[in-house]
Amino acid sequence: MSETDPHIHVERQVTQAGAAYRNLIASSLGRAPDAPDVVTTGCGLRVPYAMTSVRPESVTCLACREHAHREHLRYAEQVERLSRMPGAPVTGDQAAKAAQWARDLAKRFSGA
Image 1 (tube, rainbow, N blue to C red):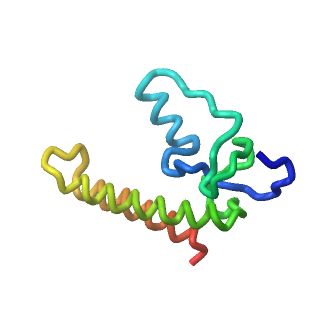
Image 2 (image 1 turned 90 degrees about the vertical axis):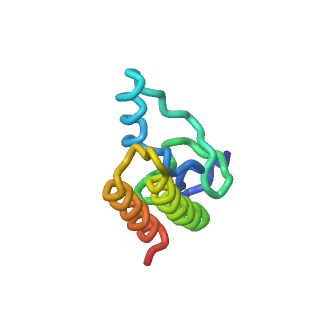
């Protein structure tokens, strides 16, 4: 962990980061997980949790932005693929909306 790193990063597991994911876990399990003090980032550094963000506009580390872009595209493909399986817990429309959300976020991370 570098004390002089001025960049804002994303967590390596960017699709499982942030308040929305913690709220999902809390509503499922009945207790909220603690935020970690230090996390591994998309660029491979270990930084204080406070130096990460899920908002593309806040992330200043280029390697982390590229990582988040790839991960959100991968998530969109995964959601669409899983929604086509028999017994899928989401409808095709729900999956399409989730995939579009992930692709929009990936686009924001790419800066396009």
